[in-house]
Length: 447
Image (cartoon, rainbow, N blue to C red):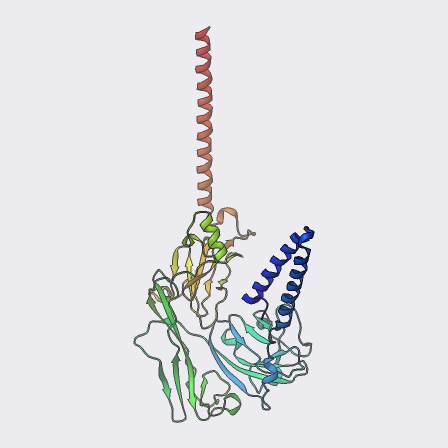
C-alpha cells in the first residue's frame, strides 16, 4: 500500500475520526472504558498501515546496464540548420560522475580538439592547453550528461565526443548540419528522390512525413524536411553501424573521392486549416470555484506563459518558441495577424526583413522600433507562449530625437492631447465665469 493511495487515505481518515471521538470520551468518565477500546483499535489500524507500507521502487541506473564500445565509433546524426540539437551521452563508467564534451572538426585534425564548458561558467576541464571556440560556447549547454546546441549551423558540423577529464572517450557523434537555400512548394507527393547516381554510390533526398498544421482555427501551414543522404557500400567503418550503407552527405564516413554530394536539403510547405480541439477540463477546484461565482467551466481561461523581451534597434532579434524541438512545428502571430513562411517565397520578396527560419525561429534582420508589440507562438497546433517585444532606439552622436521614425506621430499625439486638455480647461473656465455672473445677477434682483 503506497502513500497517497485510496486505501491509505481511508485509513488516515478513520484514525482522525477516532482521535476526535477519544477527545470527547475522555471528558466523560462513564465512557472511559469505551475510550480505552477505541485506543486499541487506533493502535491496530496504525500497525496495519506501517506493516503494509511499501517503499517506492528505485529507478535503475541506465549507465550501469549500458557498456561502452571498446572501439570508438560515431553515430551519424543529421539536422536542418537553425534547430536545437541534443546529443545524449549514452554510456559512461559508473565511477565517472561528470563528463566532458570534446569537439573536433575532422578525425584527422587532432590539433583542433576543443574541450567545451557549459554556459554557466562551470569549467569541466582545464582548457589552458586546448583551444576552444567562443562561438560554440555561447550557444550550448550541458544538462544531465547531454550536450545541447542552440540554433545549430553548418559551422557546428563535426565530431562530438563524450569523455572524461582524463581524456577517456566513451561515446561519439558524427554531426551533420545542413542548410536549406530557400523554401519551396511540393510539385507532387514524394518521399524521396535520387539527385545523382554513380556505380559506387547514390545521392538522394529523403523526406520526413508532413508535420501537423502549425495553428488551428485559422489558415495555417504544414512543413516537411528532406535531408541529403549517400547510399554506398564503401562508407568508412568508424562512422557507420554493422551492415549500414547510408550516411548523411556531410558525414565523415563519406569518402573524399565521392563528388557531387554537396546537395542542399529541401524544406517544403503547403497550406492547411484545421479546427481547434476541445481544451482539457480545468482542475476540479477551479471548476467548483467558477461554478460558485456563477461562471461556466468554458469561461475559465487557459493559461499561456507570458515572456518579456527588450532589444536595441538595428540589430538581429531572434524569438524562439519555448519547448520547441526539431521534430515539432511552430507558427507565429504578430498580434492577431498570422506570419506565414510562404510570404518568404513570394515574388520580389526574396530577402524579407521578418522571416521564420528553418529552425522555426522568428527573425528580425534588422529589428526596428515599429516591431515592438505582442507576438504569439503556436507549438504543434496549440498556442504555447505570449511574448511582449520592446525594440528601443539608442541615442548617440549621429542620432537625434527627431530622427526617430515615430517622432512625428508621437508629437502629433502629444499636441492633440494638449489641445484637447486646453479646450476642456477653457470651457470649464468660461462655464465658471458664466455661473458666477448669473448668480450675482440673481442676488442683485432679489435685493
